[in-house]
Length: 431
Image 1: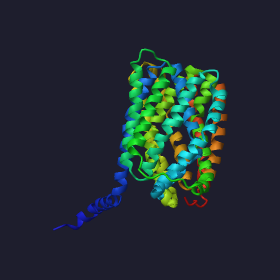
Image 2: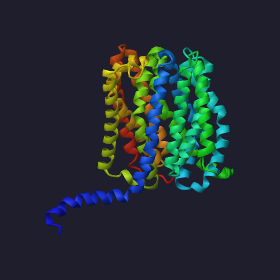
Image 3: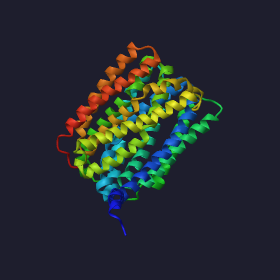
Image 4: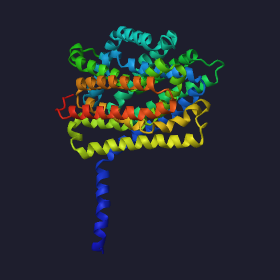
C-alpha cells in the first residue's frame, strides 16, 4: 500500500516524466540536429589543426580573412532568395521545386553583382596582402560551391529532416578535413596550392549534397511568386552581408592594419572562438523554426533571460575549458597554434557575447522583421568598425589587444540587445 509520505516525492518525478513525454518529438529532433553539430565540431577541429599547422601563420591569416570575406559575399548569391526557400521548406514544402527553380534563376542573375562586390572588397582590404588569384579562388569556393551546400542543409532542416541534415553536415566538414590532411602531406605548402584543395573539397560536398540529400521535386518557374518575395529576400541578403560584415570585420581590419602575421594569430584565436558557436547555432536554428509558427514564444522576460544566460554560460565554459587545456598543453593543437595558445583565455567573454549577437539577429528573422534586422546589423557593423579601429590603432601589445576585445563585444551585445528587443515589441510579420 502506498504511503501518503511517498506522494509528494513522486509528483515532481511524474511532472518531469510528463514534460519529457510531451516533448519527445522535439527532443528527438534536437538530438538528431546536435549530433550533426557534434560531428561537425570534431571534423572542424581536425580541419583547423591540419591547416593551421601546415600553412605559415601569415598565410593562414590570408586564407582565414579571405574565407571570411567569401562567406560574407556569398550572401549576395540569388539576392538572398535562400530565405524564401527556407520558409517554404518549413511552412509549404510542396513548393520546394518551384522555389528551387527561382533560386537557380536568381543565382545566375546575381553573378555580375557578386563579381563586382568581390572585386571591390579585394581592392579595399586585400590588394596589398593577398594575390588576386588566391582571393578569387577562395571566394569562388565559398560563394558558388559551399553556399549551395548550405542551401541543401537549410532545406532539410526546414523540412524537419534533422538527421539527414546532420549527416550531410558531417560529410561536408569531413571532406574539408580530408582536403586539409591531404594538403598536409603534399610536397609544397602555399595558400595558392591550398585554394585548389579547398575548391576540390567543396566541389565534392556540392555533388554529394544535391546528388543524395536534396529533396526530389520537379523544377517549375513561377515568376509571380518570386517577385512577391524578392523585396523580403533582398532585405535578408543585405542583412546577411551586414551580419557577416560585423561578425568578420575584425579579421579584415586586423589584416589591413596589423598585417598578415597578426591576422594569422588573430584568426587562430577567433577560429577557436567560432568552434564554440557550432552547438549554439543548432539550438538557434530550431528556436527560429518554432518562432516562425509561434512568434510570441519569447514574450516572457524569464524565458528570454534564461535562454541568453544559457547561451553565454555554455559558450564561456567551452572556451574556458579549451584555454585550460592549452595552458597546460600549449602544443596540443600544433606548433603554430601554440604561439596563440596563451592568448586564448584572455578572450574569455568573447564567445558568449558574440554568439548572443548572432542569436538575437536570428530572432528578428524568425519574426519576419527582415528590414529592421538589416538596419540593426548595419548599425552594429558601423559600431564594430569604430571600436575595432580604435583598439587596433591605440593598443600595440597583442595580449592587451585580445583582452580589450571583451569590452568591444560587450558594447556590441548591449547595442544589439537594445535594438533587437525594442524591435520585438512590434507585432511579428506573417511569413
